[in-house]
Image (tube, rainbow, N blue to C red; front, side, top):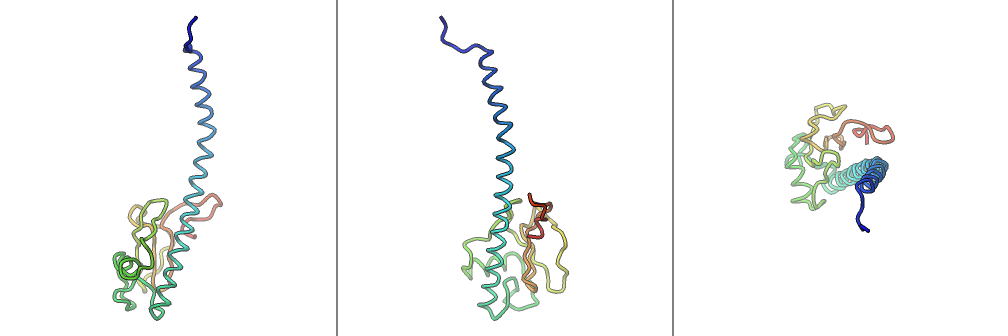
Length: 151
């Protein structure tokens, strides 16, 4: 008497495992999406709080200006230096959980704030110091139908 599995028995086991995986995968993917949405909201909350804290400690001037002098809007590196290197407000700039970018596009005081995301693979955030507005640079809507850009 043999003590091995037949080919038919192995195929049945593989088929059952495939069915279970097909059921579990969509559930796992929806949880992954919800985790990204929660991370994006939390990162925006952190950034908004840090912007307000920085402004409160610098006579109302928010981060992002070269030499803290409006209207000289700087670059991502200036913002990085103000919040991390010199200011110690954050250990690192949070990343956009959808594109894994932490680079921030700074919008000048006289420029209109964009109405939709752009350069998605380059920037994780869009920020305008004059209005202290920072947004998630990602298209589409979340599981509740809210545009990511409107977080």
